[in-house]
Amino acid sequence: MFTLLRSQAVRNTLLQILFVGAIGFVIIAGGLNAQQTLRENHISSGFDFLWKSTGWNLNFSLLPSSSTDPYWWFFVIGLINTLFLGTIGLALAISSGTYHSSCRYFSGTPSSATSPPHVAPMNSPA
Image 1 (cartoon, one colour):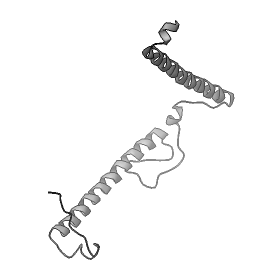
Image 2: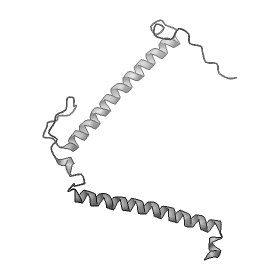
Image 3: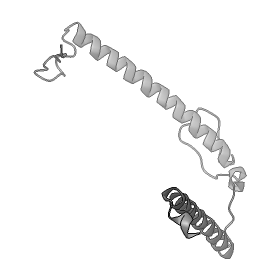
Image 4: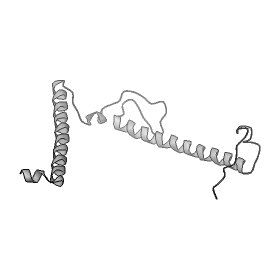
């Protein structure tokens, strides 16, 4: 046994096994502790809340919603609203960037009023 421990490769392998085992033990112990604490405090875990009524309305929604709709429907509405507003923001950023870059490229005056007083051109290394 002691002759095996003299090998660096064997020691490294044993240390890695010990380390992974310790991490696994901490994860399992934490999970069991959380499960016991939830049970003692009569707290249910899971995804059953997704089918319960929310009881509140949204100010802005692309999809129809009411206060009796379940939580999963409000998550869908939130995802659709996020994609919609992200698309609008992306379109505005692209159009604004195109406008400002074309003004700078053609040396027009619409962007010169808002640009810094002196912008030096970038020199590329030869």
